Image 1 (cartoon, helix red, strand yellow):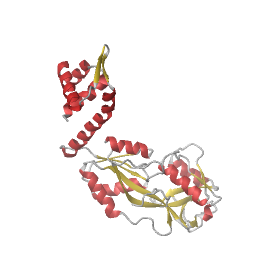
Image 2 (tube, helix red, strand yellow):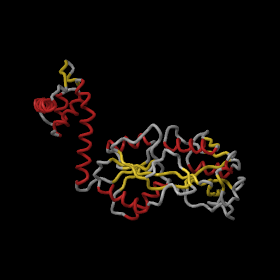
Image 3 (cartoon, one colour):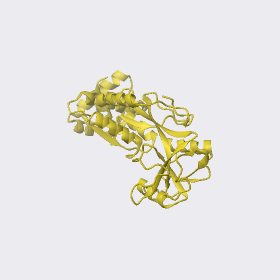
Length: 320
């Protein structure tokens, strides 16, 4: 299938007039008509119906349009992978201070020659759509939430299990503990504003609450991690969960000094079992970007084991 005819079809469909499509393509209106006719003959269907207002898509044209757009996106990705001065590798890390961002920083240190664009998307549906459209090359996510399996063209590999830790102020009842069991957290207020319903991380915490009878409060506006830490430090009744790799290391529970100066916080390991958040890398199976293969190899070399004894993840998490 000739890509020029496919591109002409998409532009004509968007413009609604062959004359406007011809102007955009810098060709004659007759050339547009000929290209459309060639495409129609190759497909064996009519794609447009002429009307007094221009050209309208037939039912077959409407059915073909999204596939035509995808053909052009795939062609662009293929060309970009070998084009001189090719574009940066675009990766979604969910949160700029999270563990996935740390993985990408380590990759950048190991491969400074690779150009990177690092961005953040809210939920897995947006990330998968961006991967499939070619807007991004990869995303770090927890997969796969019940009822929302990954599309067949999306590959994934589990790259990191991040243990959750309890974060408290120095006046909290558990601040002096060297570690706490999940059972000891029952009845304590764990405050996590900003959890977005329907995201894979919201489902993770819902399952954690259901499994162990914890109380996670999501009320109140989300003013960001700095405001959250200030509130936890100043409120003896509140604690929060943080990934063990999400923030700079804090003094452990029972330590003599607080971190940072003027903000008293303690990080306390959670045991019996240790909840871990499973990070997987997602990508499109046909993505040709050469740096994507390099990233996957880097993560595979650095990956540790998964589902270790004494840890917990929801039963929907893919084992690999």
